[in-house]
Amino acid sequence: MELQPDVHNALYEPRERFDLATREHLLARITPRERVFIEYVCLHPDQTDEQVMAALGLRESTVMAYYSHLNRNFHVRTSSELRRWASKNQLVSMPVAGPNDPPVDPPVKDFDPWVRWY
View 1 (tube, rainbow, N blue to C red):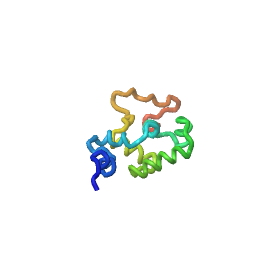
View 2 (view 1 turned 90 degrees about the horizontal axis):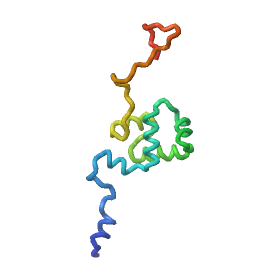
View 3 (view 1 turned 90 degrees about the vertical axis):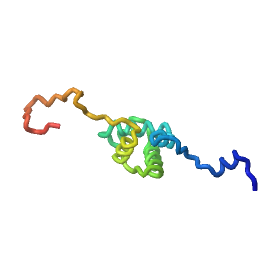
View 4 (view 1 turned 180 degrees about the vertical axis):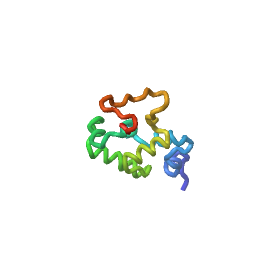
C-alpha cells in the first residue's frame, strides 16, 4: 500500500521535535497556565499549596491535574521536586541571596549576636 509522503509523516513520524534544546523542548510540552503555576511555586517556596491556589485563583482539582501531568511526563510529584526539576532544566531562575543583596537587619529588641535569629 502506497501512502503519500505527508500522510506517511503524519502517521509514522514522532510528534516531538528532537531538534529543540532541552529547555525549549520542555516548554513545548507544558501549557502556559502550567508554566505560570511552576514559576509561582518556584518563586514562593515558603507558601503552602492552599496559599498557591488562593494566589493564582485555582481549584484543588486544577492543581492536582497539573501535578498529575507533571508526574506523568517528567516524574515530578511534589513542590520540592518541582522546584528542583525547574531549576535543573533552567525553566525559572530561582531567587538567590547573593553578596550584592542588602543585609537583613536583625531584630533590635534583646538582640544577641551569638544567637541565630533567622
